Amino acid sequence: MRFSNLLIPTSKETPNEATLQSHIYLLRAGFIQSVGSGLYNYLPLGKMVLDNISRVVKEELDSAGAQEVSLGFVTPAALWIESGRFEKYGKELLRFKDRKDNDFVLGPTHEEMMVNLVKQSVKSYKQLPLNLYQINLKFRDEIRPRFGLMRGREFLMKDGYSFHANEEDMKREFHLMQETYSIIFERLGLDFRIVEADSGAIGGSGSKEFMVLAESGEDTIVVCQSCEYGANIEAAVCRYAPTQNEKKDLFEKVHTPNATTIEEVCDFLHIDASACMKVVAKKALYDEHSEAVMFIVRGNDTLQEIKACNSINANELVDLSEEELEDVGLVAGYMGPIGAPEAIKIVVDKRLQDASGLACGANESGYHYVGADVKALENALFDDIVAVKEGDRCIHCGGELHYTKGIEVGHIFQLGTRYSDPLKAEFLDENGKSKPFVMGTYGIGVSRLIAAIIEQNHDDKGCIWTKESAPFDVTVIISNVKDEAQYEAGVSVYEQLKAKGFNVLLDDRKERFGFKMKDFELIGIPKAVVIGKKLEEGSVELIDRATLSSKTLSLDALIEEV
RNA sequence: CGGAGUGUAGCGCAGUCUGGUAGCGCACCUGGUUUGGGACCAGGGGGUCGAAGGUUCGAGUCCUUUCACUCCGACCA
Image (cartoon, rainbow, N blue to C red; front, side, top):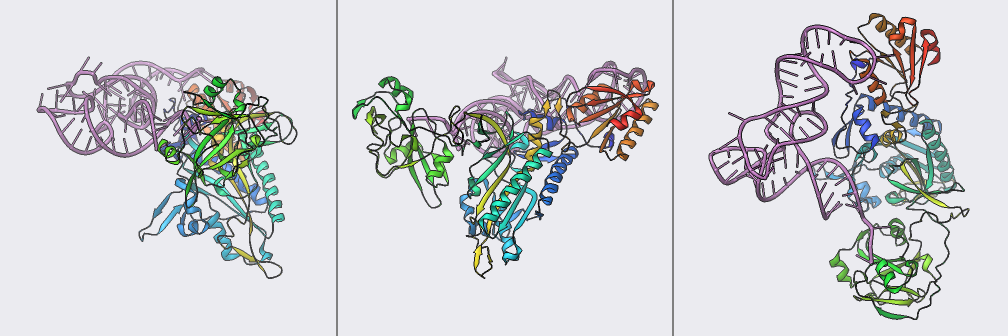
């Protein structure tokens, strides 16, 4: 294609809405255009990259035996009500009504639709297993869309769903998808890590995320230095020793004026934060009701909200307002499990299970208890609700755990019968017995991958596309299009490279050399052939975008070299 | 949802305090020169100043309301 015919609006200015490198370059190089919060148009270059990524995804999935379909974007709410997610999914689910006042949603994910599709056409175990996927738009009304394509509201996603007669077969497919995803991300040239994850709103049991390692990633992941263990902070676990507190204070109430934070209490009592109970009160939301819950962790630990939420099977945890705290009888700064209002559920971190001699709030302004025993707590639920810290020990090998940042580009789940049960999606087994499908589900953020690739591959001049994602393989830059020899040589090289099967961009614009070079660097096509001054000696230059190194070659040698 | 900020030409911004007929740079159009690292000269087109209401002889500027967008936070007893 000729640059002069393409719509590639590059810009020297940094758009003020963008802060992330990938976002800035994608806008400046004319890949995308923003239309509203979390909404983007893809310009020709952006669409090419999107198609390239989709193609890789499709090729690998097809060769793994999956089949592509396309489901409706607008989904009748009835399906969502049936699965129980119409309420549970929260505000991210965009709901609306048609002219007849029927409820609809814009699909944020398509379990319901796919189960419904299969339910209507699969009746026998002989038709299983089945792995269906689509690469389609999704809409999630995110709380705070940001970072361009990284967290948009409307985005392109590959979502796949597999259906099996039993658990073992579903697990086999899960592993096949894990391998397939690895191949896809390798082909796209990404440095990624597979980590254990929380299942979130999708539900189900075992799940793994594919994380592209990048400083700007929104997810914190915990990785072991010694073995392969890696997990999202939301699901990370570690070895831990039960809390042992040497100082055995007698149980008593102590006046602690103005000591409302862990730090102040520790200073006042001359104890270590690990000898305190930190209470985090939250409101737990369920389908039908909500309740106040006290989560108790060591003073030097941090509550992991997702783990905490899972420990009581709540839909979501939210902060309690000051009025709500008062209503349930809690005093901010002086909360503790002893003498707390009976209606409040108490969840204690496992690390504290046998601890004794701890300090905690007395549920009375200005007072704390010392010498409290966790054992004495009746009705408390014990679970792992604390975030893994850097330096904690790996649960598998005892190695040191560290934090790193990642961009979630893929997520695979073992769903089981989470959807087939409520939606009554069943098949007949060998014995003629009705059984719900055992399912797996697998997602890839196709549009997010565009941002992830650039986050991992850019320099201070612009994008550096990887081989399979690049909008073009090579660009032929004619230094001065008014120089007939240069122009003709350029067109000839362009034609020859095309004939060899390359996807080539011919920069035939009436611009100066420097201008075109800047655009090449900004856009990030992997290679450029410069037809310029050296043509008089019968040679041209081949420039590698990643290293910016250049080689001078004869015309014939060039065609071979590329 | 809490906090902060910004809306003026396609993009980046000044003008708002102190009201008096809307400006700069880039981009764009025309002509000319230039052609190996975002050229130069001359001429030109383009804006209901986010929206609504109010004050005023007069509002981009003051007041009220509202909308949109961006950033930060949502770790806290």
